[in-house]
Length: 98
Image 1 (cartoon, rainbow, N blue to C red):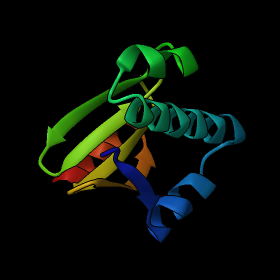
Image 2: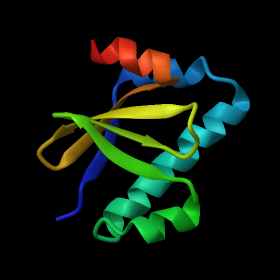
Image 3: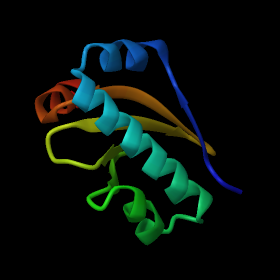
């Protein structure tokens, strides 16, 4: 059964604060994640959307996706749903995880 993707209002607020190019980057990363989920976690298929896409577990229940080193999206996993909770840089991610 594939995973689903959702987001919370604070994620929307974080994305609104990004510049236009960063918004495109976040959208592309989320689209690559959906391809990753829909192809039974096939990283090569997701990397056709964004060649530098990565998806990794930070610590339970938090995961991270990115397609470039500076901008990351933090996800919270709950059974079969991943919820986007933060879009930001490395320092913002570290602060969030504390």
